[in-house]
Length: 212
Image (cartoon, rainbow, N blue to C red):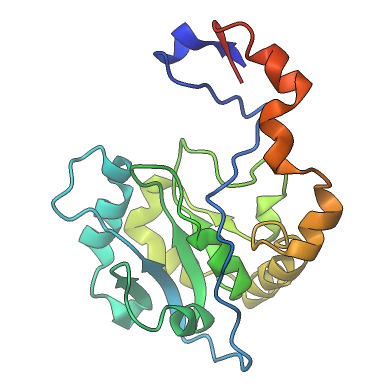
């Protein structure tokens, strides 16, 4: 929490008390019944910023595309949003990119986890979904933006034992991130539809100088 004025009039976010929740997908693709061999090192589906202003994605997507688009020989596969075979490709991929965009995060992170593709967070300043509530290091990697220039080589050097640990973490710790309804029912026994009328929320919003 903090004075709204200090945030340019926009709602504030305090990683010390807040948890970032990505957009929710009520109808998410189910994992394939037969797991495919993971022959793709790194995959991303989405807008890579071609023709977009520099502020889009903080330049992260543009830099990745500039250096690694078309480099399937190094295991890097970048696809436009809406590309056919989305679920199949995720099942074939070891790592999947998580980049900032222009309006927060996409719900695709949950799809990565659901299909066993290890999320790779490439964003130095943004808070990752569920960061602070989940131990992201148990099922995902974080790569500094300065290392985009070495991305496929860096990922290719991850030991098989570490990859196996992260894949196991996708099953155990990734339940919330992938939207496991049974897990949510046990872990979050709260009717979110009534949250807006919760007495605590009403008190916090009573003073317009503060944001929650």
